[in-house]
Length: 393
Figure (cartoon, helix red, strand yellow):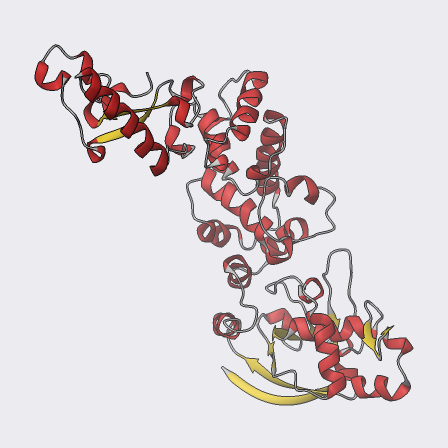
């Protein structure tokens, strides 16, 4: 890989700057010779963290913004076009400011670029950006892209995959799943955890479709890299979302981020009484004994058999010690075992045995699955053998 260094003024970099606020694509500079946000780059995120203001303030103070990296000739049709490898957040910020997309405070007053005094406008436009221009094979340039993004705000896994498998497929997917202006994003947000700007929605869509095919995301992207038709992804994604939306009548925050693609694969053919299913979910969400509320959905969908999914709250140490003491005192007075079930045993060696605390387990008198509460009024201490044999009865 070859490199050369150049210095550009901001006025050169933002010459012909174009920024589409609706889909954040087509970000260009250097009079159209620089693609500021090529297909492999992440979305613009500085505006959501306040870093856009910090960039402009740094320029006005004369602070260095750091080296930016461009690549050239990554593909045959880009032989004379520069693409930003690293620095697109900073360059996009400069372009957005000088084209009036946001304001900063100067002397305590909100100021857009056009409202700045001429000397401050010139200070911004004459500010110098040092660049390193790299040329090499696409593989070399993408490896360099990964290295560059290990510092600062590092690329996440999907952002890196977007770079590695850049092409028509990723470009088309980003237009749908990385577009925060997409009107259905609000609906998706109830079920998908993450930030659309950081490619989390795109990652989810790819995980769902690749899971359904028994493939890794990487394998699926590699196979479809040159394909501009993403209907398979969108169709499956919409099917999963619609299944969740139509199955569950209430929206609980615990729904967000569950593995809905996998749950759809497992249960979408199962016939449920939706009234009973949703009633049960609402009950479990209100049940203080259920520690893992996120486990409610797979628990109910699977037929309410695996209580481990719910992480049912157990009796605390103080409760167990108190119940043990009361049972033991009563048993000693009556001359039988402090385990109520051992006390019924015809064998005298068991019916009169006094168990130590660490030899006993706390048990729900009325099982939790039958409506029993996890409080002291529903607690009894049983020897470990009887407690394990009792189960949910």
